[in-house]
Amino acid sequence: MSAEVLVVGAVAALLGLGIWTAWRLEKRRTEQCQAACTAMGFRWLGEANVITQPAPPLFDQGHSRRAKNAMDGETAGHRVVLMDYTYVTGSGKSRTEHKQTVVLFPASARGLPDFTLAPESFFHRIGQVFGYQDIDFAEDAAFSGAYLLRGEDEPAIRAAFHATVRSLLAGNPGWTVQTKQGAAVLCRAGKRCKPPELPAFLAEALRVLASLSPRAPS
Image 1: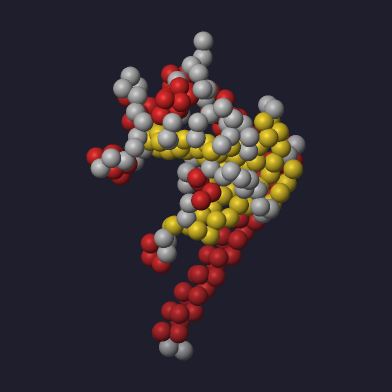
Image 2: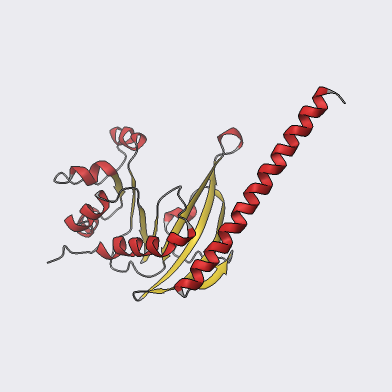
């Protein structure tokens, strides 16, 4: 047997092992998510189509979009959908798969303006030089340096992001929050939380959403 054949066989075996390992890990994650779903008293949806309309911008990004390990229920009077959400940007060598745990509140952002909030990056700062919108707060450098905030109704957005919510988000960086016509989605982009941590993740997402208000608290 030639060395070339041995090398090809070894590579194929490694690829096969990698695929099998990834499948086992995903299967284990699904089992753990099902256990968390039961513990929270939610309804298991699996890979059902859970994206309701109007959908926040996250669900329009990239291609090969897929929700799995989805579950829905009610918490603190809010209907909520929890899921693993994946989408792909680019192709070939530039292909990137984005995976994150997402909390969707289909109707809990009524009264809030449409906006997108995401961790600010170096490229966002470069974009601002060329007119890329970022709603900054001169009195809050910590929040403005940590997040990119965009939306059409700037006065309403500024009212929603009063000092309390800015302090919460600046002290707990990494959140992506989007609202559209009363629907809200929250996640930490590119990060999936461990299934046993889903209740805590949901509680923190609800805390962030509940802190937002069209008016500053009295």
